[in-house]
Length: 331
Image (cartoon, rainbow, N blue to C red; front, top):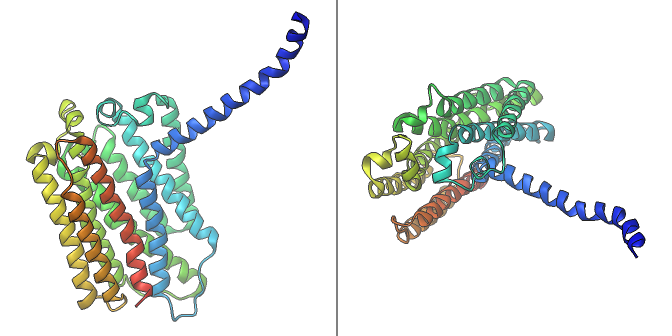
């Protein structure tokens, strides 16, 4: 019997090792997904699709039928790589803070070593710049500025995240101005190269979306620090929440979002001939009502509820990149 069992054991060992390898691979992919900060990945993806759609809508009537999928796909990948570089660098510099504020993140949780995270950040940063260099000058400019601001936000000795104003400035400048204007100018440049057709200047729709996202992102930037008070206080990261208090920042964020929605609704009727104002009004009033209804349920003493409402604000941010291009196509 001992001979039989000893003969079977070599064949059974590889079978038992396969589930372990698969499980390890899935765990590593899930850790990378968390490392990339999924809500920012979704936001970046939707911004690429939305700006392409709006630029396409602005060029309707010219006979243009679209751009090669390689260009659109490459732009998306370049932006995603830049996204991972920025959020990854922030995690590398905030390991001790994240152990308090966000212990589920891969470096803080020990799922990634510091060396592994540094490798991911270096590869994604280089890929973002190389792809942008190949795809067009406006994309290269957008990616370069985004990476520069993301580096200044997290990396010593500059580390702008230590200062409330400059921390917010980095976030809303990249998300609000650089991404929206940069992507429009890039896609418009592609249209020009392919068909000798383009919108001669940045149209009102792009300025309107840029201003909306700029102010909306300011609300996200000040709100994101509310659930992170404990770690920020221990490591001397000055935030608006520590200076003003959680209730004041919470209310400020709500009113900033309210101004965003009402201003864009009004602009749809008075200033934006290329959008459907009725659709814009109905959808934005619904989104605004949902924001106020959801905010009334938040207990500011409960960190989990604050974090859930923060994710809800990001969902409203995602939604705008679906609503606004639809309003352009329905005009």
